[in-house]
Image (cartoon, rainbow, N blue to C red; front, top):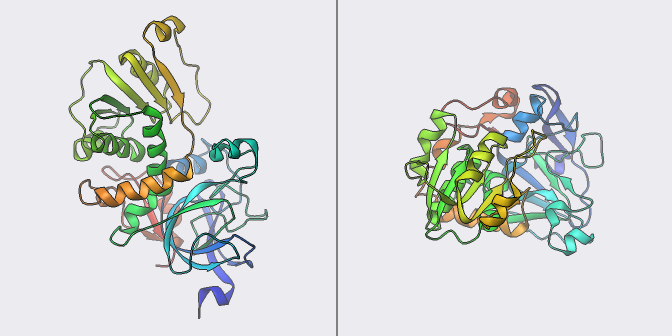
Length: 340
């Protein structure tokens, strides 16, 4: 039976801790601008691991999951995609009308909603990717995935890769620059690859030897303690950030992307910022253009960097609890395939 005409789908509903309740859920009628996607594969972002371990607050119960790829199976009037397209979609859903949206800051929309972060008992129950189907409301950016790009490579575009594209934009022109990437998780190694691809000399630092060992495969050079032009932090560690800030050369730029939970204050000497012409900027989420760039970047480098090797073989939806654990050494993303 066609899954849309059946009006039911299977979803893994997070109920607290690592507890997941597999249920049959009704597929709603689509409103104008909405899209129904059959999820092919979802990768487990580190923020979901933080949610289930209590490090990050989240609506509960809910359907988690915001890094995914799927096929469009139905559209409402005015939708921007077509049935049959394989797509990835943004984490944030913007209204398009508020002052922030009009200024081009849709990621910080005044009425923002987020994929994989909404209450199951609200008006958008099928909001997460750990389900056979997800409903994408009007205001969700999408990007079509080209043939030849594996699902396991495409799925992280929706969060990790697109966020990195935003940090690279914030850092400025990287050609010929000395770049320090702090944190060698999925975002960090993606930033290493993007920086290397852009013509920079990129170093990576991390306290995890297994992750750091992957860095050369993504284009990193040997780390040293010399000055750098740009530092990008994905750890949120105040100590790591302060160390990176001290390494910035004259005119250096520090991009903060990992400080997404409360932490100790950062010690910053204003005189040092002034005399050394330093810039500190933050990036949280990303804009639609970054999602498109993410897909283009992954497609262009699919055979240059080992994207496939750092994503685990997917588990079925019934084993989501096992996927919501820290990946083993050498793996940066666990994954689920809801229709296995």
